Image (cartoon, rainbow, N blue to C red; front, side, top):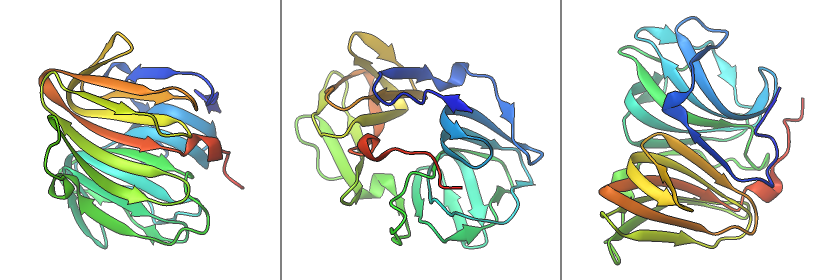
Length: 222
């Protein structure tokens, strides 16, 4: 499968308008944002776990990165409440699920295959003091990418000119970008050379942003 696989074009998806598609595991559904490959894929998705659902044990050959959007995600290593950011690099493994149900934003097969840095963070706890109405946390940085989380007050603007492409998920509130209104759940991907200019709406905005990674994008080695 190839879905939004051209990394040289701008893509905007209001994820809450997509239908849920069943995964191979009962009770686990997904909304696909981009994908290259079959069940083993370089993929960006919104994944919903029904109460008492679990995914089978598996190893992350290509790494896994996710944010808990609502509920509590769980595995044998602990509980991950709403607002948790997790990086499980290549060679890590777990058996994920949720007793009460949850929704996560997840990226698969998008790591440097030599990365072994595993961690979890409560994103709001990492925020620095606001500057001109924008408070930002740097969640991760390496030679391939930078990952941040920002809170914007109403009417303030976040600009990002990083090289290597930009990807943004609106976790809360809304923004206007290139004249387009993006609400909670909206996912935006800008190619190399385009600048992000996101102005928060009247309710402010909470944004997860990744930059630099698109120039390294490739399908999984299977």
